[in-house]
Figure 1 (cartoon, rainbow, N blue to C red):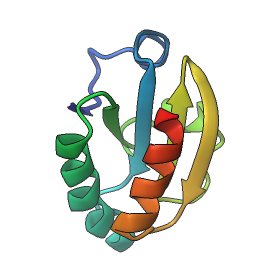
Figure 2 (cartoon, one colour):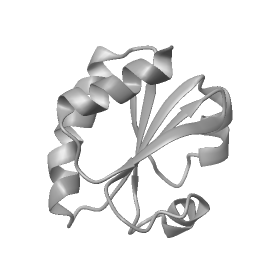
Figure 3 (cartoon, helix red, strand yellow):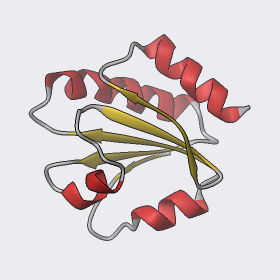
Length: 105
C-alpha cells in the first residue's frame, strides 16, 4: 500500500499501527527524489505486506525534523514501530528491494 502523506494523516499513528513501514522523505524539486518515486511505487505494488508512505518535506517540515532529515531522498524502514534502518540518496531498485527483504525477516 502506498500512502501520500497529507494533513489528515498522523505519522505517529502510521508508525504504531503498521508492522512493516517504509517512509520516503522527498521534495518535488529534487531530481533524485523524482527518480526514486517510481521505484517506491513499484515496490509498494510488489510488497503488499509493507506500507509505504511518501512525505513531502516542503509541506511537512515538522515530520522531517522528527527524524532529523537533512538530505533527500531519505528513506526510513520501520518494524514494529521502531526505525531499523535508513538510507540517504537515490538507491537502485535492487538495493531498495534488499533493504525491504531484510525488513521482512
